Image (cartoon, rainbow, N blue to C red; front, side, top):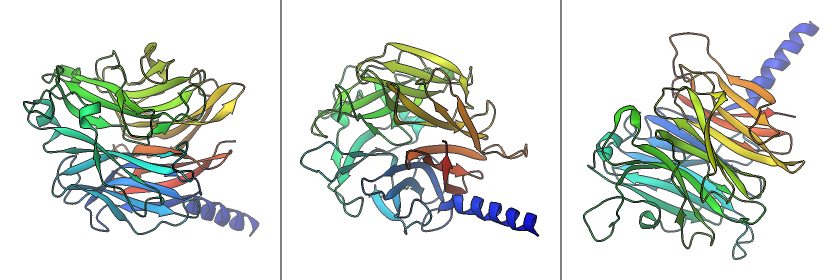
Length: 381
């Protein structure tokens, strides 16, 4: 009898730990992709995703939708549409709370996003344009400002018109498929940094026309500057976080797919330039997205959390790792989701991490061949 009670309690605990947030085919969208999550200063969780109206494709009628949870992810609100770009694409939502602006002492939420007027492969051929926007909210996503187009500041498209005249020839463009970040300490305190990537020139074999970069603002969104481009062909879908000594770590997928490991770049000046770039053999990856987050400082170093589909073949084996030495080693590891059926190749794919408290993180992630986006809380210490 006692064993039965224990089993029931364990199952109940597991069910409570994972909640459905977005379900493909419901609430007006055929598919939901690209999960993003942040926590407001008052504790409300905000989960964003791409709501794909007619199907699961990366281009088409795509909205950015939002759900909120006031109770640490146990329940979620009905969805609201934050960005609707008519019948075209609005995607790659990258939210971040600005908590250092004296004009907004309760914090202001930034949502960076992209729009596009053609399929990615066509844009890579120069047949279309991806643009970069943001909007803000001072009431945790209930109401929003007008959309602000910052393409001229953070993109380098070679377009034959007066608005976009640049020497470079960037074509495809995408913000981080996860949260943006703000420096909490040091010389660059208050800087908002958005990891991103672009393609340059004509499409190349093994996607070597892709490269990662970032953009940032030091004046709460009034102006933006570009970081140096990562000097490693094929770097793509970047995510970034603060490290010690005014540093920033950017973590990217290797679009070439020749080496199934994450790419890491280290900056010593807040993401403006890059001091070293390397492939990390401790972070296997099937050419998918990953998410990184700073959890706090211990002995002068940022504690880092990293989550990805830690498999070299399939989008599976979603794994959370914790590093106490800023990515040199990943001492704490836990598998979050894994399917042992060989026929299921995309069981757990894109994810995003949010800090819940000093002992817990929350993970919002795609599950079951993109049929669901779920939320789970993990105790890591």
